Length: 275
Image (tube, rainbow, N blue to C red; front, side, top):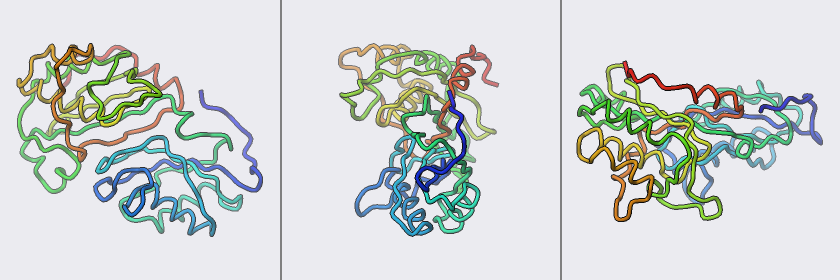
């Protein structure tokens, strides 16, 4: 549940929550790393320049190299003189063109962008029509350029809803947290005559999990794998492997959820009609 608070400074500082959009093509992912360009490092450099002090930010989660964001969330403590709207305008004036601050708001000083989140949503774009090869689309999708069986895809999306082990769909595990994730919503929809999108919301995601899910589902939709492979993978069938992961260009972090009401809405029954 979202907390309310009285907007006062905290030891001469304010905590500002930023909602960010970025084109991931030019970044080695979100997390700050030495000698490579990352979203976190660019944002921290801009904040430090504006405030004339070293600023560190907390992000809601990490996106991998080449993955984009429509609603990444980060927060930072900044000097009290910076209000949210002024900070947003100043950041957008100096940030590189592949990062944009969509929203900024002052939040409770104890707000934590990562640990206060209850779920995250990703969306993946698969181009099945020839138009997906256009330079205005192929940079932000998987230009597959072939048809997929939408009924098979819909069944596959339904199969992953709920709590499961996603060990088979992860590049690396998280021993301290395990491999079980709860999927609150998952569905394929048509994408404006260009192809299909896959949207999934979960309490947590393992490394490359969405890309492995999409790669495997696409092979199901192509008829390259039997339909019962996906539930077998969830059950840990010995010797069974996922398909290669879908390329990162089609994946977007759509939004971060901080209210359980968002999750309750996702748990409504999904309409079987994809039209």
